[in-house]
Image 1 (cartoon, rainbow, N blue to C red):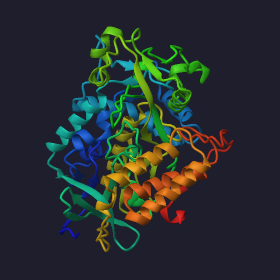
Image 2: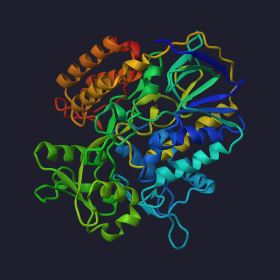
Image 3: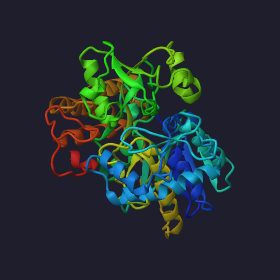
Image 4: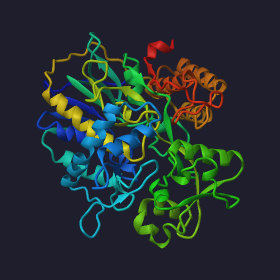
Length: 507
């Protein structure tokens, strides 16, 4: 079946932003007055993972805190792979960016004196997570960003389109993107600068807290044209997805444990101190593996919020409260069944501190990028901060650079119809079963062979390309570090090294 193809050339120096989460929208706003075109599906306001962030946004915002302390916690959580210079940028520029959001109208929770209310989350040495109406930070921030973008004269929305491949200029550079509408129509958009801001990869797994549409499409389309990928094996599993059979799984924010909620099993026994000295506030990967171990042992894990939160649950954590009540669970009086779920991808397109990839004309910000700030395991609530710090830095750099005109020489469509329901569901099950919380060479080799068979069957669809790179990187890292745990290599190597891959390296 063939589909109509139209082409559109953006004005000279204009920027094409692919994605409408926090990183993409913040960058778009900061690019003013440069013309910006934001490519997004109609589901963007509810399908952006930024909007689902519950805990809040971390920064050194209190007199007792410091950027140095925040950077140290970030580096410790990243298990040897955080770039200290990048962590310094994040922690030093973070407070000003949070205050910028407040000036834009984000209603952060405050005490009677007007000071920001800061909560404690796992692996932070002190309370530094700014919240909005308890657990609605992501949604409130995104709502304001969308309104700001809609009212900004320099921003044009290309709504109802999903990018499926990148246009190349014949000289190793990127000249825009090919987008597809739900009815199959194609639009080739030529742009001098293209920014990927498409979020994560949770939709590649059968149990995730991410939107199902977050399938790493940006990574796949960039990889096949030569983009360098970094640390693709590091997938963070949120330990406390609410285990009620929903897809995507609703999230029980880490802030609940920060407020004193405990983890127990079906025997009524608290178990975290058997796995980690920090108990419920251990790093996410340790908590996820502990919960997974309890599940494997036949002891269903539960989150007990009855004493720590109790009667205030509906006002302090309304999102979690609503998710529980919809599932027939009253968290004020009942235990919440939990299980690990894919929550965040530390890997992605390798960039420098201003979002540049190795391809001329291509930038990346947010979860689909890797600056070196998260390492092997993202520190809780650093993701929204990364989006605005490095989204802002990318915008400033683009506004100060000389932009050469780009003309597309190659337009290649994706095997759009090939990712049918059966193919997608098979891939998601295989990724969860063989590249999940615990990994080993046998499972990973079987997974790679399975993905290759799907590619031979349906073509180089973006989700398959991305999955192939994740599995290959996981197989190559013969150690356990951060979010990557190998049953057959449980120890951590003395020397910590990031992994870098290009798609052609795999074949």
